[in-house]
Amino acid sequence: MKFTRSQLCLSSIVFSFFFFAEGCTTKQDPSDSSISFNKAIPKSSIDFSRMSQGDEIPGRYILLFEDPTLAIESTNETLTYEQAIDKAAESAKQIIFENNLKNARIELAFGSILNGCVLSGVSKTELKQLEASKRIKMIESDKVIALKPMAAKQSSAGFEYVPWGVQRVGGSRNGIGKTAWVFDTGVDLTHKDLTIDQTLAKNFVDDGSDTQDYFGHGTHVAGIIAAKKNNSGVVGVAAGAKIVPIRILDFAGNGAVSWAIAGVNYVGSKAKKGDVANMSLVGPPSKCLDCAVSRAAAKGIKFVLAAGNTTEDANLFSPARVNGPNIYTISACDITDGLAWFSNYGNPPIDFAAPGFDILSTYLNGGYATISGTSMAAPHVAGILLFGPVKASGTVSNDADGTPDKIAHR
Image 1 (cartoon, rainbow, N blue to C red):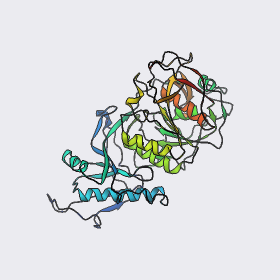
Image 2 (cartoon, one colour):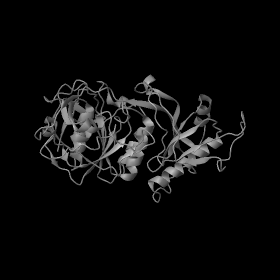
Image 3 (cartoon, rainbow, N blue to C red):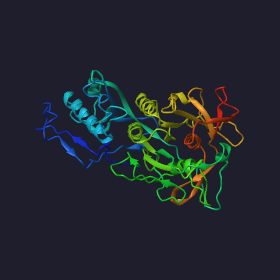
Image 4 (spheres, rainbow, N blue to C red):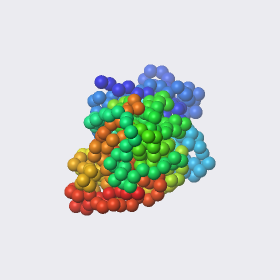
């Protein structure tokens, strides 16, 4: 199946570049009125059906700006998020003009946390030209982030139940007034067990504003963090905390590294110090994504990262491999405190283990399901962090790296 998505731009402004006369190679002045500022984002597509985790998306590149005339660090204290994006997009337009990129399109612009853009339609020859530019600090191929299909055992709501994972990390507390940002497939917006902030929610998957979950993963993660105490269903670690969906994965669990960067850039601008951001996803190594997470965390936002489910060293993946203040990479343990058989390992970057095997939480259509993964472990720690530092209660057995991970506890 071919998955078609609409072209993205954080400020909802995309610039179309036209070259007059067939075969004309003359550079066009970026101030020319024919370069449109189109509020209606043109459609583009990424055919994920022919790609898998870590594959390069053909012709699509992430650029970070070096030249001080293109950067916004000196002024972004006074710029809104939207203004910073517009300024970065203007700089991207300048890059296209100066390098005479005939078919390039601005897919995304980054302002605030990172200064850069994502271009599509760039040839290999043009890529070499960009790599030689002193105006550009870093270029990476945009790559696929893909969740594996989930084995979800669905169940119906009954009397309120505290899942074993929530009990293992110290139980549930009242999370009302706290905020967790969930980078994922979206969240079931009408689930009675969740409190959703749709005013700050953001969709980077297509040109719409829909942050509804059509896959189930994001809803499950959200419930582990913040399912309400309401006498039915399940209870989260920070019961009743506000969930802000950041949709960076599509209805099949597929996405791009650039979508994750765009999400981090947004949250880094909008979140408050002390808020928690959960990233239950693992992608290919990306210095650009790592940098975005580090910079956003430096603003006092606590980032919780899943270690991954491929029984490999977590240092092989982004953003799991990121270390630094306010950044926590989480492996998964089972009900016997053993390292879950699927969990990635490595010290560093792993900071704690948390329950990630047979975890019951919220699911699609107002339902509930049991799923396993480090994706389920990370939100346990996200819930703890909403109240303060993470403590430890014991260590896992059978840790593949020989250094048993501490099990997270409030």
